[in-house]
Image (cartoon, rainbow, N blue to C red; front, top):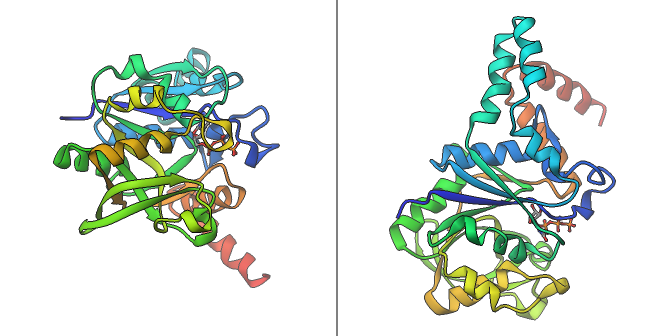
Length: 289
Ligand code: UTP
């Protein structure tokens, strides 16, 4: 079944990147010349999905504004005969049909996904974390949708992380299937040392069947007093099994200061307008380090 809808969770508090995220949503933090969430919407669109729900919260209306028309700016650009910039600005508001819903309290990623229940209806759907940019020629959302098409099971994007990192993420119980695919039969959110199944963790993307909603409604609050999506997916994995895709792509967590810097440097090194000057600057700077 073709995946036609995506949900982007962007309602978190972003406490790890304060004070930057105090009045600017971390999903709107800039990477070279675009806010993080635009890279994520572009990934969804490049995966063939045009119906997107973004789960936001108080103080995040700049996300809605960014994907809306901007008549004053558009006519100013037209007057200045700046056609390239005009088209660039217009394109942002025409990329997809974007719907918004507010999560009234930051009660966890599971709760954010539950807010999209009516939007999703009875179809499988993609989930993207609004603060995880993943760069790949084969969009990771598409990698997961293609895997869903093949297996008809829930799919999660996974990567191996360090032992230190896994305690802050989730850990997957995996059996190798083929190439970069694994069957997942169990998982745990933020494991202690003796609860680690493997160093494979879910990073930023999944495709879920609609059965996840009744499971989420039946899941009690987990780690940190939040409704954890991992706790619901654990049940899904135990009942039907899920598929893990060790995805091809570089991930940048915009909820982490070092990763924000890495994203800006690596995207700048590929940006047509500034890459040569930026490379020269970096080389010069490196001599002094
Ligand atoms: P994170 O755990 O990285 O986001 O959730 P956070 O809660 O903002 O992080 P802290 O405060 O720095 O620790 C992953 C994604 O899920 C969204 C976040 O916006 C982020 O994009 N999220 C998280 C929600 O939409 N609602 C929530 O209640 C929690």
